Amino acid sequence: MDAANGVTVKFFSLLREALDCEERIVALTPDVTTVRALRQQLIAEGGPEWEETLTQPRILIAVNQVVVTADHRLTKGDEVAFFPPMTGG
Image 1 (cartoon, rainbow, N blue to C red):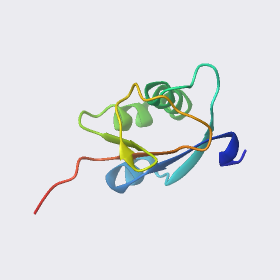
Image 2: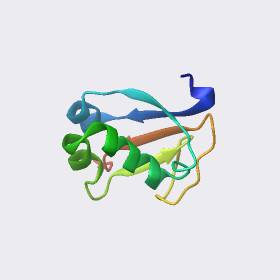
Image 3: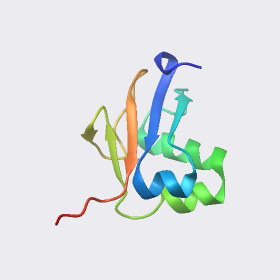
Image 4: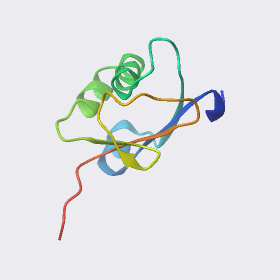
């Protein structure tokens, strides 16, 4: 599948390392229309390790490089990024 028929999901920093995955393409279905549903789909496919990683509090999610809430609606071609909270210095 190509990204035009679904969404591109990217994982950054510690999340990428924990999941051993940098990027996936996920189909949008009638059940997967929000960030929350996308996360649940990823967990269902990935298992306990993915659940532990993606349900951590304070994980940030961006759609098309804008931080969003879990209720954000997805459209075909979106880029979704999961990343840990940023720290300042």
